[in-house]
Length: 400
Image: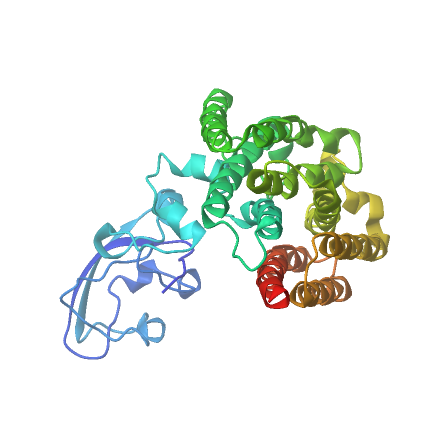
């Protein structure tokens, strides 16, 4: 049962049950309103060698003890935050492991969790959006009839994870005071005081060192090209203070892999392919990050930061439609110059439909809808990558 209790936490329970009915002793200490749902980690632990039907617990709470003896140790609300943080624990304190990103972070040692959250390991969507332009470029650079270089895809995946983490660390160091004033970001490790600025700076050094190790695996041209992006990584968090177009700078930063992926495979950039692909990626970022920014527009006004969401306001859909047309034009030009085949253009058509659906159904005044649309862009990027791979394999059929 994945749920929580509001006012009372029961951490240790032993009981003997002889029938299907169970009645809580000390029921006068509890209010039915304080028990919305039960969770095995935060409310009570059942002994492994007993079994008792729990479906009628709430209806039996105020009854008389007659067939089921229940012995509970109650703790005050002061222990509730700690228990809430441990809500993914199993019986007798054992962790229940989850393959989700958030589950993996929650299963990590407590001392490590703030650092994993600082690099947004629990929210991998940003890593995907940084990684996908790399995959497009690597896929386009593959030989006709061949799959993309798996080793290169793995290397860039590692680099995306590290550089996204470094970017988030830099962002949180710059925005510590702003984050404290925004409800969605107030719990971030630096803003909440779980990690000091010095600890964050040290952790940033570790991430950048590891990312440098990845970069050094590439050719000299790509090393120089990759190093050139560092200035964008460092300065992007400042842009929201001085311009309503920080999403444009983010696009220039996040899509650098569209240039780097090709050069890593081919030794240098073919600008007739890389530039329109890079341009398309920048337009894509303007789309999804403007949608994302609408979640925080009320808080942004209060704290004094800028975004395209505040710039476009009720004309957002019109602007996003323009960015969509520009993105699709860039992808078509990329395909022409890369001599892509029918599956590629089919994927571009699906991307167009996906973006049109986002525009049509988007409600910029509902944060939950903005988040849903934002994360759906991972699937959009994967669809385009699939089209590139299949389109490249199709070239072999045409040649023969």
